[in-house]
Length: 385
Image (cartoon, rainbow, N blue to C red; front, side, top):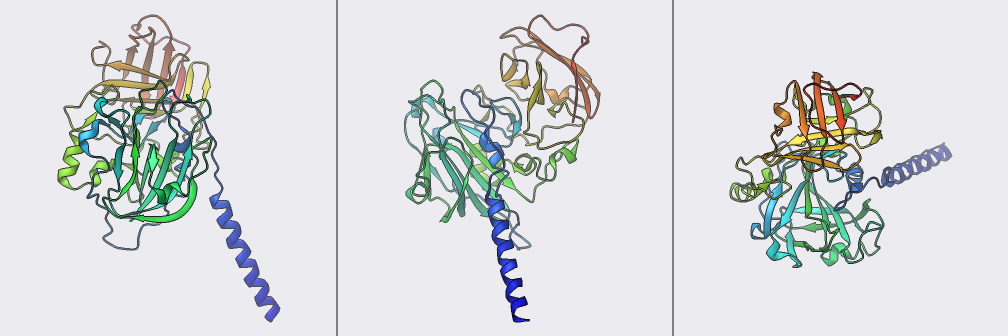
């Protein structure tokens, strides 16, 4: 009897160790890169996220301190924009620095009480020698809320001492927990002028109590898109005065400050419109980040728009993103296109024609040259939500 008890105890202990080891093992590899940013840590966000909300009935997180003083900020990006690599819509907000503060250390502070639990120090192979390495750091703010900062250029010693190895990718490692109080210095950002330097840093907040809605919800469920399905606007967690200060800085990729103060949404899907992410596979397989191309036609195909431009990602072979600005006669918000629409690429020539079949199906035709025709040509591809 005693031997059986010892055997059972040993078996349970080994099982627990095996589970912990498997959960720590990363399951995603580096993928496509754009000129100024890398997409790899989009995948690492799926790993080792807080799985349970705090067991409090009224559990809320409020940000009481600026992450970055607004005086340094040129503009703040909406969430739900097309990633620089064009292959997906992302839940991060890009923060850009005023040119007068380039090459200076801009301090970053803890917006709330939070605990560091993951991070990485890396430089992507092939990056220009004179560009700085990056940190990606992840914090648990409690109540199922996670804060991630990407492209940070320096960190305080309690973080940096755990990230002494310079890696070739941004997959994060588990770190010894470090508690930060609201307003405490956590690191800094430097905007370099060099060609190939990143054009800002990333502010990501995910909240497990929020489930973003998509036309085909199944495609984003069951860990296929945890980054996107729980992504929220970071500035909505701020107290009123600080929220307003950040909202007044919301703008587009080209730097235009928006008249309508809209933080965007991690889901750009709208029933009966062409906005959002579309896929060549009708069947649901893998995660939404498993991209591929059939000739000119990429999957996923990402479409969104704002006051500055319409962004179309992962179509054609000449540019990761096509932008149709408001001075282009074919500009129209994708969320307002409910039947068919052709966008003319003014910068390089060519066009993309979209024809909605139903809420979950769309035909697409792309041409690298020529002008928009009166009707969609034959020979394109069918996409699905």
